Amino acid sequence: MTDSTTPAELADTYFRSWLARDFDTLRAVLDDDCTFRGPLGTADDADTCVTGLRGMSRVLEDVVVRHRFVDGDDVLTWFDLYTTGAPAAPTANWMHTRGGRIVRIQVTFDPRPLLVTPQ
Image (tube, rainbow, N blue to C red; front, side, top):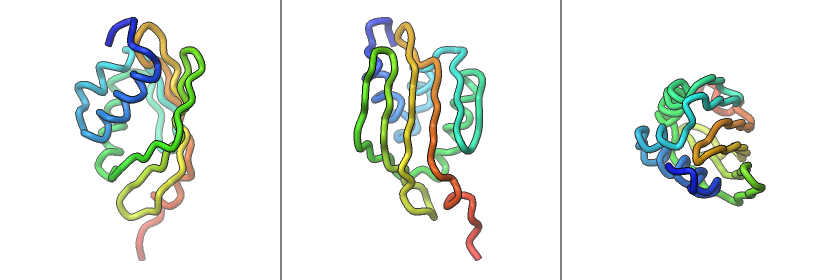
């Protein structure tokens, strides 16, 4: 990505790459020091972020974006997270960008349906 890549374009590439399991492109939009905070994990650098997203992709079926809000260098994406064996999870993903890269990702959703083991 370049410095002229918009925050909305970064968010679009992030989600599109994650769904396509194109982790090289996904890694390219993350700053080396990108941090991630979410209900299922944390990461303090881009490579650890990609490792976590790669793990989550094993159960990922789809991401249906309901709305994207852009405010300067911040992007909030509201979406339904579809995973195997659980109902869709309404999810908020807040990204902060700088210099054409994503530098911080904060995600929130109710993880309980994903953590329940079938009887």
